[in-house]
Length: 393
Image (tube, rainbow, N blue to C red):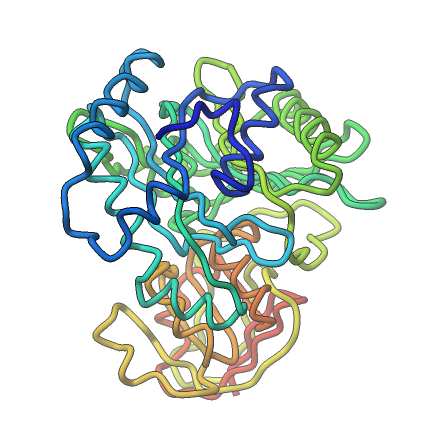
């Protein structure tokens, strides 16, 4: 009824779990765990509010005991997730830092339910995919530094994004991370403005403010960036294609948390390192001006800037508007289907928002400080996601 992670297959457990199983069998540093496979979900489907069967809860208890009963990450591994055709990045729930069979059972229910959430349904309609849900239960790494990398393509660099604490802040776009390009052992660094960090504490995850001295200090030295990139090369070699990899560092050990094919490559990164500005000079809302952020999804679009602070603003959003926000919550995916472009105040090119924008083929500029202030609601703006610029008319 549960499958050890090292024995996970695509057919029984989905591509996310199966990819980690391949890496485990190859001896790479993957936190151990197990999978609740598709057939358990299918037996429970249509009865999502019922408690898990007692025999399954007992198997969860045994599985947790086998990996030392640590705090765990409970994550989706859906049938059409993490494939070469569609990533489903951020569309399904992950529950981090839970402990014990009871909490894990509830987290599994949360993952199952997310398969039919509004955002997941909108994404599935946009990509033409349907799905069933396996659930991955894996020891949580208490990360000192976490992030994402896109391994090197033909004649291109490995791109790494990193921030303090758990990498969920990077993939979720809640910070503007440090960015590293690694090619032939040479590292080019762009230091981000990392204002918050996520960590596990008793009772769950906490968000804290990064001290001023660390906000603009690089998370990785060159040697560590090269180590991460070389590990990525090994993973790409095993997988047979460039990979989108989530990773974490704890006590100087690099851990691999996820590996999936890159669905759409990001725009070419800047040719020279630069620092992300702490603030953007503002001509004032409604005044003409040009602003520079991170080029995240290529193309150009002109439309009405629509400031979105939360779901209460969704009703004001119209087909062809430009989504302008602090960062995109995964629940906002339905807006991507009608938006002409995306602008955020935080986030990097490897975040979920950037990946989904590229899959929807809409331009995106991320990490533009004060975007919600300097781009007036209702103003006509042009987003160039290849150059990373936003121009007000």
